[in-house]
Image (tube, rainbow, N blue to C red; front, side, top):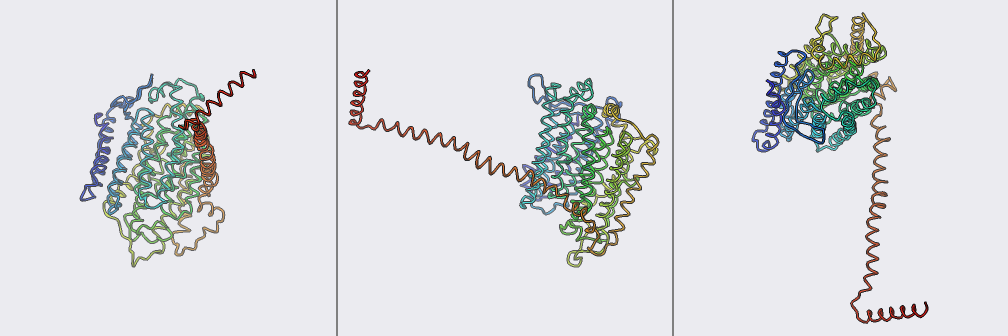
Length: 639
């Protein structure tokens, strides 16, 4: 089945080309949705076939290399369009195509009637192509091509409804912020070329394995790669684009900002686990940034009232947990949480889309309430996904989140575990706050004139499928102490095992026999968060809440810690002033243009003076000859 590998990418590419070139001619616009959906579904089916072949191979030889052709050859550097399908990449491929197919199906109902229907599915297929390039590449340059491609598609999809300036602003913000991170990726590749003379994974990892821990070049490479990850995967300080990206259609939020694009940074670190394991300083930075991101985003999410903004900050927070796993050297645990997060967060985003659809595009939870009886399927799936993200057993998020927290504790950091557990409490609180404000309590809308309604099958079928995965997905990673086989860890061991072993050498192990007590504490903490949300929000009948009595905490949370305002005052406005008032009006207009225009004017004046020598009048020439003779005679007589 390895011959199917290029067709995994080709299927959505064909869908993109068909809709892109012929979509405008469709008499029935629904054709575009079905073409795009079938293309991604075909890609998913082929990925399953390749996965099945890998299962029949010995664990140590499951990596499949497939080279299409040489791409660049400069000196000793050779880069090809070639793919690497191994235990790590196949997980991401299955998530991208499987969840992507469900989101495409959902979109056929959600986007129905939109004038940009065909354009939407064209962009969506292109995004799948680029994301697959990112995770299937066998070298950093091809990975970077996909990396930039998903950035472009994100820009197009966030600003899909470009008629409104706020959507354009959100798209530009995402694009510019990500360019900052991408600069780090470029620098890292440059240092790789100097250090290793290659950008191919096998060459780089092979050469790095023989280098000592803390090597300066490796530290620079990993720090720059992580800078790229802070952009794509929304970590401090570059997380600010993701909440604004909710301006795009809800399926975009589910696909790009929950299940795929934002996890590309996790993939990059996990793929480069040997490099990061050899740089303990970088792992420490990752851990600190990750836990700070997880806590900051969770606090902001506590009192947001836009249902999509709650989920957006939740995504930022969960990405922090994924990076926490990577930062403590538990690369497999981080990838496991990527998978489970894709299931329950995609379900939550699509569920929020169903709510928004039913509420006639209303997103403010303060204007909802009592929707449980109107949207029974949406409510049930949303509740299941909420239990999963809250970390309640046996739902998927419980196993992946607790594995990360346990690894953080066992590998030497009690403080990281405590902070992570506190973040889990807040996660349970703000997610059940969203459930209660949306589905319980008094109806805060005009049901007589605008009655909510359950969504069409094309929209609720993906919700049910993702809810089922949110229940069952975690069983792939049940730890041995709970009677499981740690299937995901065993599957990823050939890829991340050496990196985890190297990372563990620089850490102080602790907590033997503490795993079960810590799991129990973690579950109790999550239940406390749920009970707090139940106490304050389940039976809420009026909008007069106790939230504002929290004072500073409420103000900071509701106003997102004023981070956007701080960035505006300290970065945006100074940059604009520097660009407009100094670089443009002074340097460009007065200095550069002044030199150029002044040179031209000076030459013109000199030319005008010289031009008077040749007037074409004979009398003038005679006078000048006489004057010249007189000057020469005078000179001779005097000297």
